[in-house]
Image (cartoon, rainbow, N blue to C red):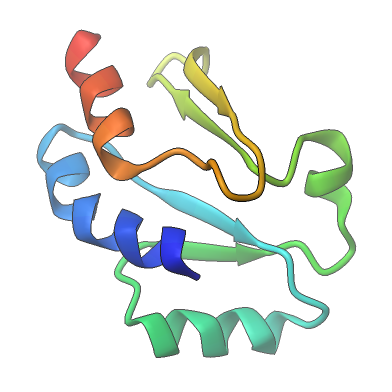
Length: 96
């Protein structure tokens, strides 16, 4: 949850740079993701992966910066306690 709150703080600047943020929440039911979004007062989209399809195909701690052309511009493959922060995303967006 801490990472989501931190990303929420960076979200306005990500939007100013023309970006959008989507987080995928690993929760057993979609309603749990909605509760987490409301509790953390998240402004960005929080999808649910209750069937673990995304986390099976990708690391549950990974993050990707995808360009408008659909290509991956940057990626972060962190550990549970070493996930990407909003500033790293902003810096990668500025490099584009």
